[in-house]
Image (tube, rainbow, N blue to C red):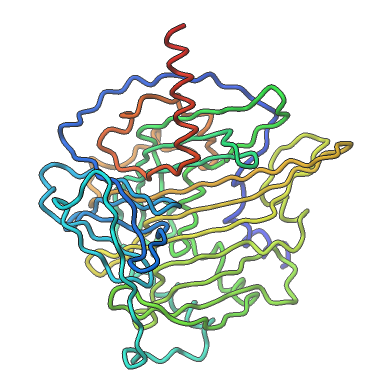
Length: 430
């Protein structure tokens, strides 16, 4: 029984990345033409109206459409709006804040959007928290067929993964992908195909290993715990957790209870701890933030490291997850997820250790009803074991993505991109 539980509990973390001996891949120019006349690009920052602190991973949607984007880890946003929609509004949402409605026509080249906190008054709380938070979680999972998409959808998403050695970017891969999103009450897995992708590596001759994600965009997609709930909260695994209520907040006019979970003290498995944001009136999950609780670094290493040098012990010191859901016509769906992992490499017969960090994120930027024409053919579907850094063709010019919405890169990625472009210019001159 213990072996079975371990296998089920590690599906979410299994094969997130592998560690290879050093590989070098030449930078390639992608030849891609885009038409900038069809859309207008807006960028800026989303901040708290009082503290002026940036709001990370806020959702930005073009009113009346499914087109959206997400602010980055500095609160910066970028969204491309078709010219025929510039008279509409941007809808900006963030947990604990009122939805901001911003006329697109009022936006400048660098606009700051102010978000007002949503006061949660005691008199507004007319829903009594249930006595059994564990049962609430089970009810949410059991009720997913009613609250989340019940028909397949055709989604467009932007995916990014990066690897850092300490503070230096050493690998970057990005892709626009399409997702055949299956109903939430279906056991059939989602499928992904790649529309466009680019990558770059910046290893030095002194580097003795290169870290790569195995699974690519599937890593981010499998954090959709409402679709893949058995990865964490199967009926067997849920008994290994303690649940408690940890306050409340609001999303628009919804009262959201925060359910905290962590492994029981007697549990020896490598499980998770974090918070679930639950609308208990409708029994649905709106957000989740959680982490792997590392109690045994050798066990944790076996969950993640597939291949490594013989003289190195590689293990995670921190693994964090975030997933956000969005709502359209009273049905919810996966909108954004983020994985952040810190790893330590201990070398035999070496005085100093190496420290790496890896991050993957994906945001749904548009979706539509599935038609026969939009089905992803089997030959176009990427394997769940894909290594995007080996599949992508290369890096290119600033207009590579064209009208596709992407997540605005943070400053460290922007610096890396500028460096790559300088390298490409030198290659072209040669």
